[in-house]
Length: 325
Figure 1: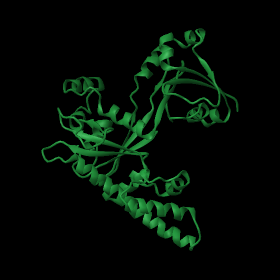
Figure 2: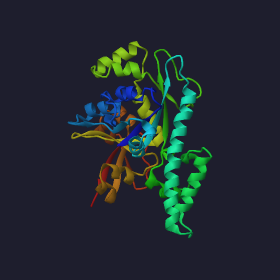
Figure 3: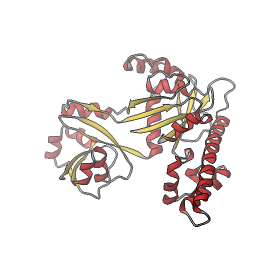
Figure 4: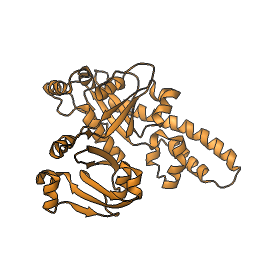
């Protein structure tokens, strides 16, 4: 499960967005967090097809903190997140979303610069003038931040990134830009091609409704794709994640894994024993299984492949792992 932290300047509506995304209330003055299932219509299809007794979606946790990067408590919680959603206000006649995005990013840079300078001071004292990998990494990070370059774009190598993990830099995390829109408007220019628009106020008002009724009402307002789906899809892209599936009589379940993961690595997401004792994975794509009508028919038609340790898992793959420990 991945954590997405919501960041924004005061009155950006990030707490309203939190309510819209999670259907949970937001309480001022304290961190708010809620775990939500990742919407995936494939799960319902597979559950019915295989007559599974249980259906389990992948999950994402959203975190909304008071004060954001302007408070120590907020920074600490945000540093625990896997990705950040930068929320900018796009409602009201005085909205300046592009300028607001610049402000949010500047606050993240300054927060990182403060922690990097502190860590560098301590590292230089420990090194006592001798060459040290952590000192070099921190100096490179400090120079990038002073040049107003986020660390994800600072050209850090894998070893340097590993040295910085302990201080969890905010600008090293993947980011999503969320435009908090008013009814009837679109994402304005200046927020980047990947920015997603959410009608947070409208969606928050439906938070206590039955999900089906809420979706129908939102469609009347012209909201065809709920904000939760938009933000999670953007989060998966930013984190470079894909979904693979398992299905059977006991359970149909969605799992997240990094893009490019091998079959044993995907098996390890299910359970470490499966990765340790991996033998092979019986694999079929979701579309092929649906076309076949059942796993039995897919096997009879030769659509189920046997893949070994080098196989790279694809989006929508359905895996049955064979292992021995």
